[in-house]
Image (cartoon, rainbow, N blue to C red; front, side, top):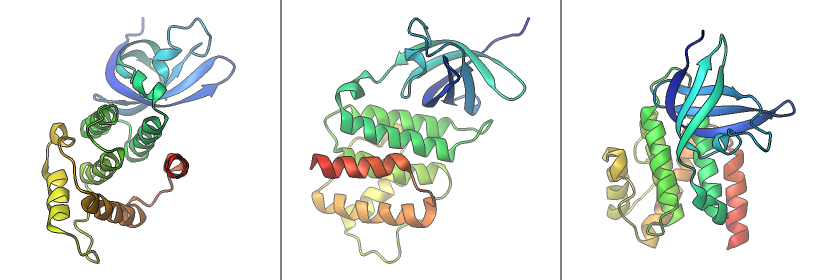
Length: 220
């Protein structure tokens, strides 16, 4: 009889497969990013229907095949239900999930990226910090976690407060990232830095970022 494994993780993507199944991508603490098939998860009475949606964080029970996993059960500790009533926050969150999907690999140690995404999603549902600041912190720290942070852009003349903010984000623990706010001037300078980081070092077009940008323009 095949033994099940249990992993702790966050659903970062799901895709329909066939008539009733899903292919679920989960960023896990134990095995990095993995893909699992959830049989019958699109049936209305399936216990996996809600538990395999993006943003679901919890414990997932599955068995391992030769090239993929099959999900059989899940205990979700956080559905991030707040995003159902916060369209803009959900768009930021979807971008965070897409960045995580782009950066992470199966069987890599992705615990830091998992914690970064989770803490960033939690920050989005709190009113204390601007969503834009959460975005810039997330993107800078994602480069740090992935070992690709290039330092301060050489062609930027930044205020001392902005330099301090970037240094704090780079050096701070993941549990201390979202504990401050900044002035409009610092927010503007952070935006300029992050745009350059995207162009020079991320090297990828994120569909969710395009949607987010058009959404923010529409909402404003």
